[in-house]
Image (cartoon, rainbow, N blue to C red; front, side, top):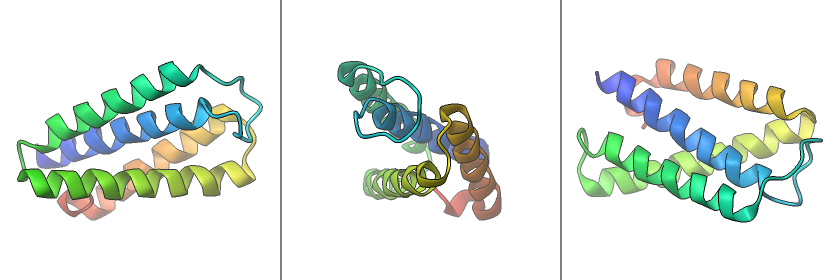
Length: 111
């Protein structure tokens, strides 16, 4: 059960970070930008859902630092993948696959 909630929390944060990236006018994909308000709402919602999923396993400080670490990792991942891939669907698919693999490899220690 711990692994499933960690995977869900990490994938939720990936979706929130991707939504924030696609709301930027400086994105490099050919996809049309979404509104800043929608991207921000999706990002904040992802933060809340991930915190709710992780708070059952860890104390509040571990949840905060885990979420900060996962956000930094996801933005670095978006930057590295986005520099080499200009299609939005592939960017999301590669990020989802990498996050899922990291969750399985690291187990409960990833989140």
